[in-house]
Image (cartoon, rainbow, N blue to C red; front, side, top):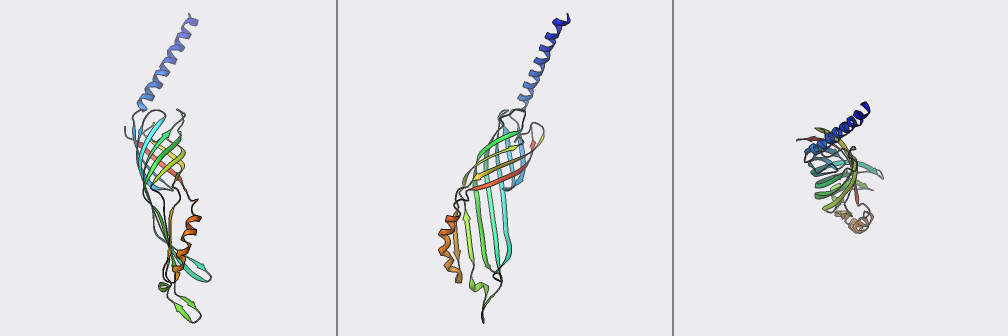
Length: 226
């Protein structure tokens, strides 16, 4: 009697587990989450939607800015002042693939539209310069201005842990990846007594041709809203 009931009991248990798993997977589909993040590409906010158990899609906005960061360095006994401005604003669309159903490991690919993606550095003497018996005011010496801008449409590739749409109400994750930003458009100019520096623009642009990648490390908090 028991020998006949045991196989039947195992079949019932197995069927119940499969049904529960199927219901859980169906409950996870078509979910939406809002995420906030921070990393090397600044602060961000995104809206993500679960497509199925292997794919999630995200639309996000990222903002990074350094405004008038000033530093002085001594060169040949004279103080030089540099002022740095960086601004990166992008809207990105990403698709993440989760190859393992029971793991949050993911492979991510996407495109970003860079509404702003540039660096500006201005260098000048921090004080007047004395040459022999002659003193030249720093304003009369002039300044060196460096500008670099990268292309607007940039692909993204990366990996990470943590679903864009978490299975639970709240989820944490991180991404490691890179934007392919291409070689920059460079402008290098000097004013007043430093105007001869303009001739170095072509060489500087050539030296920066390999600066094609922008690394990304990002931490993210996601809240599922349904």
